[in-house]
Image (cartoon, rainbow, N blue to C red; front, side):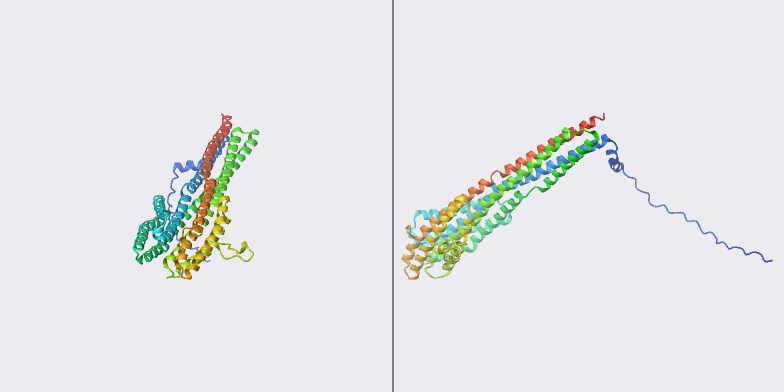
Length: 469
């Protein structure tokens, strides 16, 4: 009988010991304590009360700090609007106006030659002095604005050169040299092509800074309002939980804290809305109308310059006639349709300035529109005389010094524009002044109320903690 087959067994292989992995890094004690803090902070009722006191106090103080910071930042911006950026913006516009007026007055004095009254010479030198003074102020207050400093430097360099050219023109004219008119036209060309554009750029830079300060001052503190509402909700929630656990309806400390937060929210909202209203009024009744009015004054002055230089050129060029037509069309607007506004003009810079002007300024601009019509009529009379070859009659009708001259009508127009500018500046100051004080009061009041609310939280929850001792 055959022997049973043996079952083959595989030879056991070598035993491989497991390779130990890297040892886990020990957790630092500080981290262990931090991880265990939530459990300890909520393990017992006293621990929960202490945690709530810390968190509520921090939340209330954070609300107070954020409110004070946002209100103070807006107060600084409102103060900048009143004391810095708006005056600088208006000064930049005044630099432009002074330069344009100096150019027009220089042409008037040249036409009158030795008959130019002292008042005309004084006005010319006063314009140059005003421009130099305002440029010095702009340079001192330009701060970190390299663009403003660039335009101020350009004007400071060009102003004495322009004055020298005008003096040369006058000296040549007094000696009977025909180069006098050429020098004056060259001086005016430098003013129109270099100096006035630089002044316009400076005015645009300062206007941009004013708009930026307005935006910063006018923005609403939404972050502080949201944090305040969250703080109030948490305070109310905490009082509801205490009511459920202790059956006490009121907790005087937390109730006082809630009242303080609510008062801070009301003060923040009312103060911010009040400041925004004042700033909006100052913008609508002061800053914006002043810009339009400044444009009207500049166009009137440039028209006056073109009118005088056309006589200086003695018909050698039609450039100044075209400048007069373009500038007065912009100033007065296109002719109205028959039966509308008496067949006069509408829609020009003067009309826009009047439509946005408050009270007294609107009345001055209505008078200015009437005076512009008189000036335009007298200019047309002088232009007809000049076209007919009667230069002396044209000169007399333009700068003759009588009440019927174009110069007289322009002077009266300029006075009404200046009166309107004074009224609009006063309206701006009346509306904007004090808005920074309102916001400063909001910042200080919110900080005080936040401290009182924190004290209320500590007192209210401290009384509950004392019951466990």
